[in-house]
Image 1 (cartoon, rainbow over the protein chains, first blue to last red):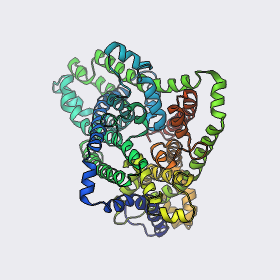
Image 2 (cartoon, one colour):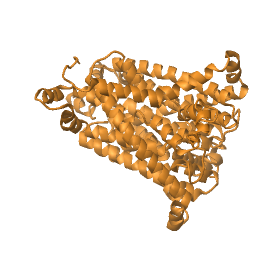
Image 3 (cartoon, rainbow over the protein chains, first blue to last red):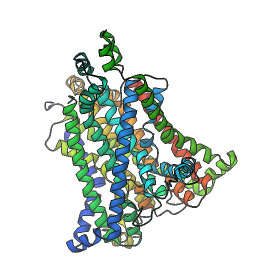
Image 4 (cartoon, one colour):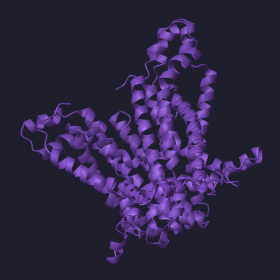
Length: 275
Length: 288
């Protein structure tokens, strides 16, 4: 876009944007950095290498990783079905996909805990048939995070599948490729970047998720305690420095993930030819 | 949508057809997997909220929602949304105007910074305000000396919600206004319209649906936010419990009817948001 000379309000709108951004986002976020300067490097490292803290990092990252992977598989199938197969009620199902975005996390949390607890609707079945207890175990965290993750994958894969150039498939098939070859060599390589982006978005969200997890997790230190909960616990015990150190570490990891997602997004756009 | 079916008819040879369409058993099993997942993970939770909320009948449901603590929680949630949504809407429109109507260095950095609250864990969004205004925070002593309460009080809840819902409106408007370009506005301006008139008569009609959707998402999040608010609220019944926190408190006290009655309102809000989104998509004829 060329610079417009008659468009009004540059100074005012940019000024207000920067002022409000600084006031509501940047200054509050910077406190986390400034407060952690009060910590010496040794005490910072001491805090985040504490066994309970490390365990919570393992729980948060492990469960988010597994949940994002499972959600990617199901999300891909759901996106495929919604884009490629006509069937009645499709519009309604498509709208429902956004439910985890729209449903407050506390509601998702108590619902998941109620369904999957040993006496719950699905919990009973899993307990009796497989002897698996989901709620109040790390597995419960995975289940809650799958719920949260699913729209991220479906909503990133869907538009790419919709805009997928069918002539590539036609070319392959007219050259004698089987359906599996078309899928494996034409469709999958083109769709994969979008699945990976959805995976990364779901993972980033899952690591920081709190509301939908705490009700089903059991919150047992070293076993099913997630990082956000540990931060709150430290804060409530007036261990403000420990809370700051853990929160800062998590924030830095989120920034790295954000960067990775942006790079993935660029790759995805290049691959699918849209810019 | 049916990109597969239409070109396939152009091919008369059977092999070509086969390579372009999934076999029926694949179709059926994939549809079953997708439907099964959606029913188990998305429909069942909604059904559960309703059945649990009405488990002891209408009267228990109504009593749970009209008792003073629930009423206070609903009022606080409405107030928080009423304060935060308009401010963030004004910001969203202003930011979108600055970013899409002018060229300046650091524009993509600014866009990234606006999205920042989305990538911060809700709990951290609450913690930063405790670090600023809490008893041991930056302004802690000063606030204490002047008897101003922000953390464990309503102002903290409003601030955390402002932070959390910060990007919603800007995020919906920026791609749309970028795509629109500014030819129409330039035409109006060069014909002598003032900046305000141009915005109201040219820009606003073009962006109204995206704006409405952004406001809707912003509002849904403002009313439903749990993590950030939970850190700064202190969970004082009747005073700093928002509706999601009231749901938590009731659930932890094994008061299922109260928890799910509150949850039913929030779930209703989510459904309304989804329905309006579908309506807006239908109206615009494209995905939001």
